[in-house]
Length: 397
Image 1 (spheres, rainbow, N blue to C red):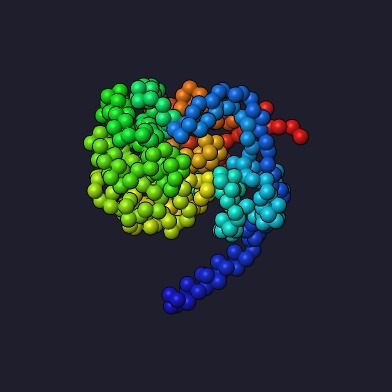
Image 2: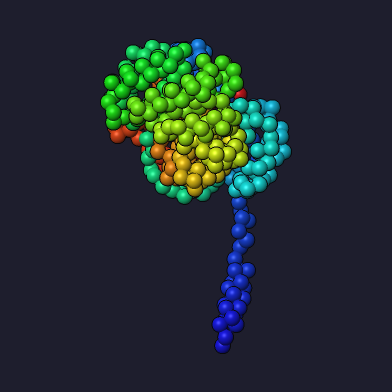
């Protein structure tokens, strides 16, 4: 008997047996509705100014979430969306299979973006639904990896040099593994003094990163003084001497030539990308040598695109450390993604104690992530995002 004949016979026998099995997907869930669920404000903590003089607030509750319902009684949740998108979302998704992500994602990407309340929120809710229907946390569904990730404390206030250095010392004492400063003082001297004071407060063995926020074109968009190449280079060289882990957005977002030249002149990491869109823009950054760390924003790009960007960066020997997300379900989704990547050492978390403490936005959850003594967030082990919204926060009809 020839080998090819045996293989054909085995295949035919196997095919006959397979044909007797029930069709896969015969009892899969179907999407029945998409709706916005508003949340009550349980507590107003206060306000504080950010680095451009805007007003930030501390709050428990408020806002809304998106719900994707199915005929099996399982509901996926995600960040809020613009209510104007609901009719189109229902036309696109109701009656569909939640697992058809290869079809859902490009269709969602074609919808108009509305800041942090756009199509990416829907994709997050669909992934949560897929996790719940398979009874797996998303990081396991996406391949597994770490079961804990260290956050860094991302500061929004400019305030005084002394106050910022004091915050760094407190963060280190609480277990945080690093901090990020907005470095948008009027003068280079002040930006340098900030890191000098912080280094004195925390020592050389703690992570400090700095954000220039210079990706826009105008003083407002760049969060303060616009840096030219000379200012950016002088800042980077000074920070490099003080062991700053990365300098973020030192120049205009699309000044690829300037960013690449700056990166050639220094050995410290340059980072950026929170306002960029599409794989092609991140590929340009990486191929042209602009950044060592790309920082896509999940609330504008969605989980599938972040996975592609992270894989692209990894293939080129670069890091992918996402922008913060929404500090609620979007940031939780970041946590699941990061746990499956080998080229992401940290997750960004806004944490401006006391009013802007990270625990306030996370307190919409029944069991929110909490910083442990070693400076980590444990991965949620429940299915999907693994998060349940506190029932008392739901607004009644």
